[in-house]
Length: 474
Image 1 (cartoon, helix red, strand yellow):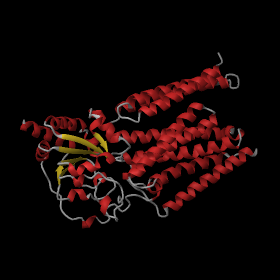
Image 2 (cartoon, rainbow, N blue to C red; image 1 turned 90 degrees about the vertical axis):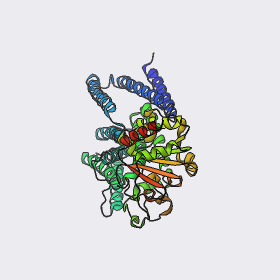
Image 3 (cartoon, rainbow, N blue to C red; image 1 turned 180 degrees about the horizontal axis):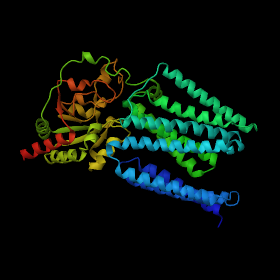
Image 4 (cartoon, rainbow, N blue to C red; image 1 turned 120 degrees about the vertical axis):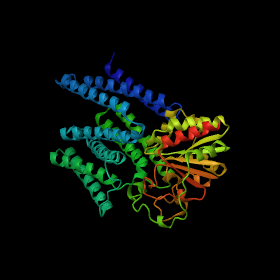
């Protein structure tokens, strides 16, 4: 049988597995199996890539065996590192890992572009292939360095925001300079001229610096959108390099990732009521606490047992999870407490903000890990009207996504961002380790409201105290 026919058929099956896996990821109930399906599609694509390399190069390249040996070594190292880190990573560190993996994908695309440009293969195949190699290299390099900065911020290794005077002008100069170098590389190659190695090297250096400069000024509250944006960049870069290598699996996988990442980015930005350009260029959270000093009221402390008893005798309770819940790893204790409330006949629901946590879907994954049923987990647009009828709303580790300043304070950096209406509940409790501000640096007006009480302490310990308080009533 013709080897090329087997390869094309396998690529087609891999593409179907990618698409079907992505479709199953749309629901929390089927997301795990969707990941497995897409994973098998990737395994198939990798195996077929070896057949593709052998089929194309068996006569043209005498060192195929040596090259495949190096590939196997690299693949083994990658699989080993990914398996170890994936098993070891804590749920609170998952956003950092996602950012890191985004960067690795972009870096791989940039590396392919570099090889094709340095060798002259891209230029020899005409202007279209050369342009795609340059664009893929630019986007991939930006995704690599930008994702590494996002990882460093999320992991606490870098200050939240680093801004230079004339930041946007510097970014524009870097961008157009990189484009100019890319155009020069393409023009020289397709016209038969010699492409300077220094020119190509400078192109990639500028692209990497641009990724850093774009990401360092962005505040922490925008990190979920940034991660999603660089995910889209990585997919686009991989698709472009798939055209350069004439590899259908790369084209399809990159297109799927790029389109899904773009849609998710737009949805996340919409959830914050801000265009994507505003996320990248507005320097969100720059002033942080502007206007905080005139907030009326004071914080009122409450005991965990008092909050637990109030919820035990309530009719309707809404729970808002946040990053602090993930840090404390308190999701299992929380669900144990929820089951005690449900046994008492309390109507308990979870409210999830689209940008809660440090990456898209962070809270959904956290609750799924604890076994919380999907039918009591609700998105912002589905549950926001219910807060006015809730006897008690409890916030565990969330901050900016429940701040009423987003509705009323035009001077606030988060003004206009849709929030969960916790302040409209009859009674609100906020579980918080201290009196610090949120990740955006904005003071939360909810904490000072008349109907809000603060329960200070680690969420894990607070939930244990609440469970004991409720059990003592039985």
